[in-house]
Amino acid sequence: MDNDQDTELSSSLTALKLEHRRLDEEIRKLLETVELDQLKVSRMKKQKLTLKDEIRQIEDRLMPNIIA
Image (cartoon, rainbow, N blue to C red; front, top):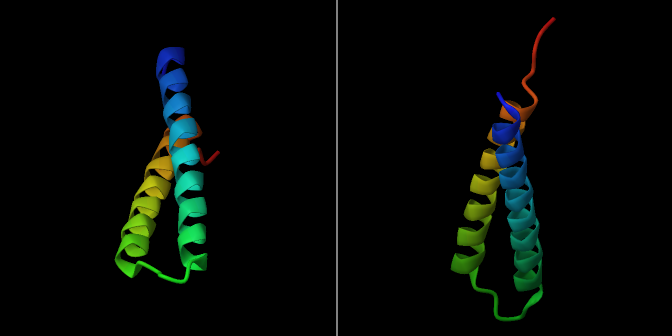
């Protein structure tokens, strides 16, 4: 992989991690409210898991697990 790809992947990784944290905070706030919207929370949790998978894939591409 060249530097341009690494830079692009690193930028994507940073953006995904920020979005993951934002969703986590929003879910936490929703869970604290009296009028809990379970459907919204469920959708957000699913989106958060999808982001986590994308983050893991990018991290694996940036830092491959090479068995020596």
